[in-house]
Image (tube, rainbow, N blue to C red; front, side, top):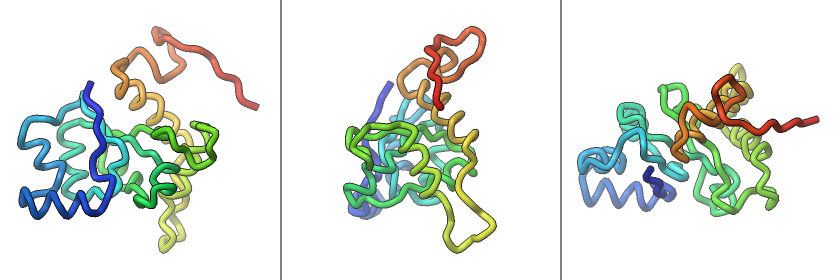
Amino acid sequence: MISTHVLETRSEMVWNLKTHGVVATRHLADIGLLGPDVSFAHYVWATDEDIRVLVDTGAIAVNNPGSNLRLSAGIARVRAMMEAGGRVAFGTDSISFSEREDSFAELRLASYLARMPNKFVQGRLDSLQLLRAAGDNGAAVVGWPGQLGRLAPGYLADAVLIK
């Protein structure tokens, strides 16, 4: 598994375009770095082309919504990635918004931030879709796809009960 920070800042996006003449994710694909075993922390400044490459290569974007807000990095295009068929996992990058490292609060924040304010019929992301993405894609990021990430026969699991 390979995990790296990609497109966390606007300056990184611009630098890649100026230096390589292509978007960051295209450059990483061109040098043979991308595949389903690669994850990108943050991925805030992804263009439409970056998202197409993400989908095509099977790489996973790891959204850290609280960290992105605290660092003034921006808001990742989670809805666009998921609607394009991209895999998105969720994390805190050890600097969550609430300072409690509460994964459920971060998922809720990701859902709210994906709401499109100018599209009134489009609310927050679907909770079940987010939980499934968090479980399945989170398991893939840590190298345990098909073994962790859901409560299902054949999966390793601890049960968490939430009131």
